[in-house]
Length: 267
Image (cartoon, rainbow, N blue to C red; front, side, top):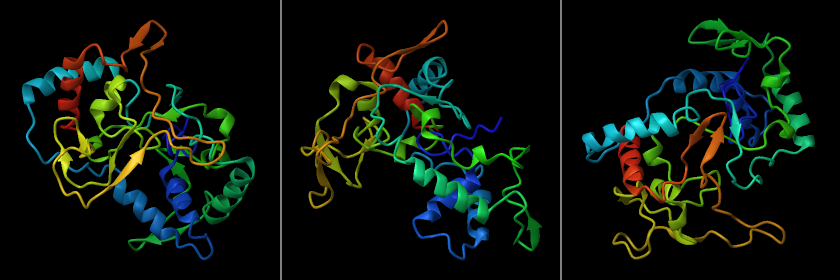
């Protein structure tokens, strides 16, 4: 089973095809496959940028145990499973049937299992296998259909400190607000470069000191068009799988939330 978990909804599991899809916006005419293959090689195992501020190691140790109990089963490397945690499905279904068909056709034409390129002076077949699994006859690894992805992939959280704002649509400004959903703001400042070390995210509060010329006001619930509106809901209720319950809402245990935040700084 190929289970890389690419894209927000996990529908493109292999890195080489994710790279090619990123190139789709520029058109795939005369595509140089070496670029996508080199990006795959470069990013595989590349460590995240380290958190540049102080960390309370003792608190982080407590957070590590809480993370292992409530978060690690989902947020593990190459977990291709998708989860419906109450977030808007609009981003999950952004690829329609026609675009899915076109992507299959273009991707396979540009990189089939037999496609050979020269990288670093060596002939390789970048689309022949993934994690030791042959991709011959496996067009499902290019892009799977929407009906297989009612939710979003739970990606690994290395370097998560630098990836605010959060959720798939960037409607939650800090990790604290993700863990304590009843305090999520309906508007905040995006694109400031100064950092909120306490809540773990870029400075978001209009009242916080900082460069007032940076950033812009982002309102969560403004309608994008006549039928669609943004939403910061989701990842805000505990979930149960089998006999185990995972805590997602830490509103009633803020000390636990602070411990997890401290641990996430170390990833």
